[in-house]
Length: 241
Length: 315
Ligand SMILES: Nc1ncnc2c1ncn2[C@@H]1O[C@H](COP(=O)(O)OP(=O)(O)O)[C@@H](O)[C@H]1O
Ligand SMILES: [Mg+2]
Image (tube, rainbow over all chains, first blue to last red; front, side, top):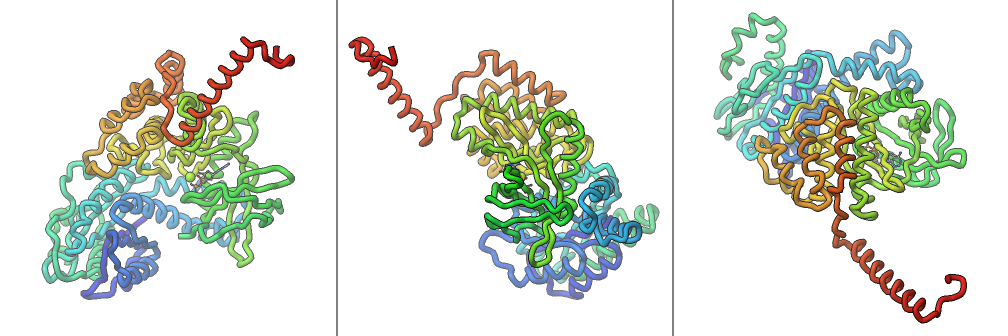
């Protein structure tokens, strides 16, 4: 199972539309979730629409939250998406085996067994989550909370029985940035990592779409296997492009 | 995400189950949370609680837990009674289940009303419930004030099995304040110690709520630690006798809830518990007034006896 979680607080303004990028992700079997982080009094109504559309195109969900709710939301979204992904796969089986459209269509006394299977697979299936963090200037005061949410997510993932890995990216990659930087390659343990995200916020552009495309590419390269991953360990922003 | 929040059932609405055709008349809303709404309903002249969920899979997970609990304790009165779907006029379907109606109040309201003297017993009963659940192979997960109902004489019932998780799996649902991961005190793997940690935070929340919430606002995430919680265990007279116990629970030291319950019981009857000081709430004030009245009444009776003025029926 593969998820891309975008955490942002504004509209993209450079390059490919993030909605198109999200549709690409979906086509690759990557579910896209989006969290919009807002501070009290802050209004991002225009971004709100974009956030919703990205999630819809990416087959995931979107939420607008403040920094205090961030950890809980990341955790909940991830879990929920795992269940939904499995559920979709199970529904496909159900159609073939029982001729039922979905779990809901089964009579209640037959749902129990199916849901047990969903729960079990949700717990044990391998899971890869790429976090793509907007570090443009307005996000700066929120980055500590984002970092905390990432650590919290890893803690939750560690208690799953299936293999669970995260990778972290931030964007823009430079002053007139066109893409993202990989801060953390696939890992299941970040205990030794002092600081995940750079504290130096970039001003200027928000290339959400291009950054997403790079992350999708990163997923695909990961599929080639360990040799290529080894070469990518020391990867920087330029290497991704 | 689907939610049941858009569905509001007015009192008097009659719901007929799609599959089993059971009829339930809605009396009123009992409460709601993240996974659904719970209504008081009438069925064949008896009252039940009906939980209506938005998501069939989530609700079914909960039902699965309740089922496996039921199969373990056949002799007791069943908790889960029926499972069905409700088809709304607009065509949408909502899954629901019917459970025993627990007459009682949520934990903090109970203690506020009945007084902190009930706390040791209620705590003990709650530990017993947790131990029972653990012995059935589950951890409760989302232990918090709203999910503990207390009935007459401190009887305790856990509601909301949305967080209940088979031991060894990752806790399905939790609330940050009560989560040991949030306090940098351990994993989110479902173990008995996970619930005992939440239980200890719950105790702190009941009597040191303000200071507890203050901690969540002032401490940096990486600095949160069980030591901060342990410091809150000695302040309030109701908690003080249990300070050592709470420290052990926060440190994950009890091997099981059963062991924790036994230790709690020893403190309860070991003379360590002093009657709690009355809270200075309106209830406490009213109780004080009542006490004064009783003293005045007693004095009057003593006077009447000494003066030989008692009515014949009483002498
Ligand atoms: N069996 C019951 N009897 C009486 N009240 C109940 C019962 N079950 C739940 N409630 C009330 O409804 C509230 C919400 O139910 P709960 O199952 O906790 O929903 P959620 O999973 O959405 O949090 C509870 O806090 C409690 O006050
Ligand atoms: Mg609840």
